[in-house]
Length: 427
Image (cartoon, rainbow, N blue to C red; front, side, top):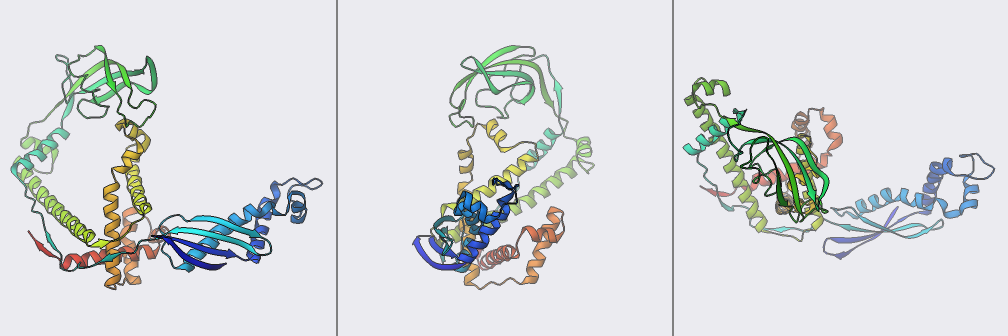
């Protein structure tokens, strides 16, 4: 392989020209022949027994070229990118410009690179740390949530449905008089006011009584995930089997004993306050960090490729999907429940993704300017908490995460600590 040239064609875009030699191409053709020969029919030969020369005579000299060229792409283009020294942030676009047995293969590779970043005045920045206090109302609110979590559902028969009740219903949805796929359930448990269903659905169940059969009318949102019913009016036939309300326990010493490790309600309140104060301090520190990020971003200039933002959104979506899977739900099901289109769902992450990318670029530049170095011993230490987090041996983590990745992450961490330690923080 030989790198012929590297040229900038626009901001964060480069064109790389590279060649595979005739010898490299011949080796790849032979490899393609060995891979495919058992699948090729040649009159007079059993499968796998025909020579390469016989196959090429029958099907043409170039019959293995496509497989051979594809086999060269990863190594040749990867090597050319490494040799160019460019830091690529997206999948390269590859075009084969010439193929011959005499001269080999020529490639034109277009890559998107990490942007050039400029930043200054990052030492001694002025930020205000937010003060988060815990009020008596906060404590009472937390106790109220504990009370609700320890409540029990009891059937009510002497009144109609109220907001906050849990109902057991059958429903079938119709559009233009036809039942639609995914619009029917039996004995579905729905908490009224939870917002699980499209707007207007839950509200129309309020006031209905046990055993009642009725019809409600709604309109699916314009941005509903299932495009075939988005924006359309629908009719749902409902049968109400049961109404349940949440019966709350009394907030007293007995509640404290049942719901916590404490013997009295006052002890429980004191513990709740302490935990809220710890959380408030942690939230204040997080908000302070976010304000430092905002200042750093304001002091940075860079033309960021959109692919970097999209890649960060992909990370957020994968994390969300992982959390959904723990509840037995996939993303498609979630979007169907919420009536969202995938594009709108992704766009909810765009602002945070852009901020994360900018902050990372700013800190990487600071790490370079301050010549922050991470030792190999430090990298080894970084693997230990990751192994503990995922419950695997450190060697398994090393196979999944390259040392260079952890080294870069550690440099960013140290760069942020340097900025924060030197910041002028007021309260």
